Image (cartoon, rainbow over all chains, first blue to last red; front, side, top):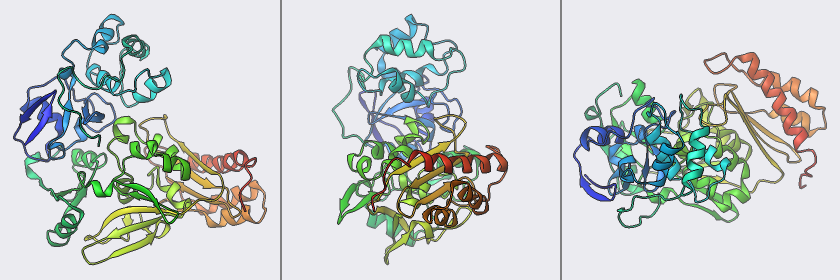
Length: 158
Length: 279
């Protein structure tokens, strides 16, 4: 089945009811996306699905046919959010970090602190206490850059 | 997931008509949309089926519009779509308020209004809003289209009048006269499932509905009647106690739910008292 993954068209075979999370980690080898709760509570597995933040543990592979998916690897380690999480200490054990960054990447441009808080309300961190995370997002100042530099053509939002 | 994904079959219709035909010919099928409840059930092995019908890509079920002064919301409209919709913001702001408190962004981007309804949880956040807005559900099968008043849809805990060959295709909401009110009480603003959820409309005859206090979402007509006839809020609170049947469960206790319900009734009445209902 073909879909766009981090800017490239890929063709992946997996049963259609497989969780997108498992397809990414096990079929595509992209283990940056983490499994926390596996039931949509914690946000560790957040990826962008046609530009919108979703929990990849709750998305059947069959529903992403032809869609655009961006994972933490799609930010290529060079996204301002990634740099800011490092410099501001927005990461401790690291399990929640990829999901936090993908949720932040879906925020509107120039998001207020309230918008950042509600945009990340579905991402749980048990180490840092969130202040450093919000500070990193504020510092990055580029919330709203939704796709990686090499992303494909613009798609209609679902 | 308890079972391997390869144990499940997924049928992928390209149109509503094809979906209805599959539902009629290939039963039993479990329809699925945003999967925010379904995949949790799959994880815990509590789903009663192994063949699924993918509705997510049926764009025709995602439209929101107004026809003959009735707001029509496609069953596949996501909570994010409802939050952003100018026509929903204008006509049914209490539904926008409910949508904002469902899960968090990741769930709002995937969860659908239709899914919230047919999942038939007594705690569904959007359900009290639809009960007080006097919404109508449009159920379609290959054979026919039925319009069922929302308040007649549920017959018991997780039971509805829907037939296995039917799909909920749209939710129709007439104009709502009078100020709308919504409040969800949970452990935290995001992600938590409601301990008590209440929606109300301050019409000449007030309309009030609660979730998480009975086997289904409930309208409370006796309480409404007390307030409509000029009774005091204390009288209305006493009657409300007889109209709800909360239980102790993992989220809360019956006693707490009773207390919160009567407090919410008072909040609604006080907070809408300055807003003159249109006669």
